[in-house]
Image (cartoon, rainbow, N blue to C red; front, side, top):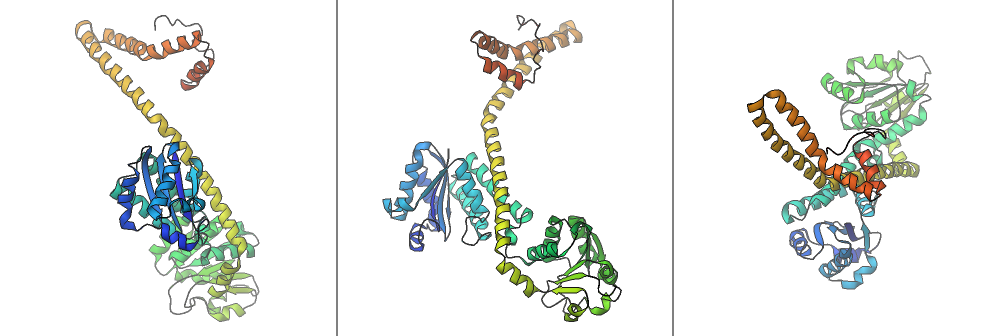
Length: 422
């Protein structure tokens, strides 16, 4: 059984959390001490300023052991019990997944917890040697989930200007799928913005940069066109949205570069650079809306709706990861049976092959092949055939049905066959 017991900012005040917190250098020794208790096989201890959590692979009766252990090492004894939460199996996995995603943090979506989880797992695995297959699988799923959330959802972008820019663009563009978007630069900001714009369903995306190779690299990642800054005037002439984020010390987009556009044609210009990439005079041109870093910062700081949507999206990803973890866990329970089955089949094959070679030496290849095929089939099928006949005699319809599904048998297959030979 998978168990987690702990306290966090949701269940305990700061002074109590401080008393429960365990110094990192004590963790290996304490985990080793914990595993001396009967029924506890694996353990990882996660300690941050906002939580102390003990994850364990243990017998069901070990729950009170974990609670007493935390009370003892904190010096609080039973006084800690009213602040403790205990989850098991799927709920324990869901809890870790939400913690790793930053969904259970004081600041929604914060990323520091991911590094702390990695550190806790590494310490338990490498220093204390208290990680086995159960917790290894659990923590690998949690870390994989957190990585996916950083790239596939907006949770990590709750305070991100690129995400705010993409959301604002989505609200301004009448038809994102038919829109022509120009991005200037090839750094992290443009990379993140391109990702979120694609998530918003924008149509054509063009990335311009002083270095063409850098533009090509980013363009290949986001299915975009690429060019150098020499192509900027031509790109601006047909753009519906342009966003710029470079380290240039002078404005790259000026009124002169927009002279080829029809007067009054709508254009959204986003300047994500400090110092500015876009001359302030651009915002005075007819039909052009200029959005600066300060404008976007206000959007990030005031958009409760954005935070709610990002969290809801992340919760869905957590549930998908939980389903994946459950599936992997179920598969792992079959591994010993599968290994035993294959080992038995390999033993039968080796034994039969030895006999077939003797026949080949004395009676020829055809006789050996006939013996090999017939004997190998009979030996491999003997045990399941006997079990199925016993199941039929005992009116065990479930086992018979399971065998048909396991071996992918048609209902009428072999109905007239002779099983005596087996």
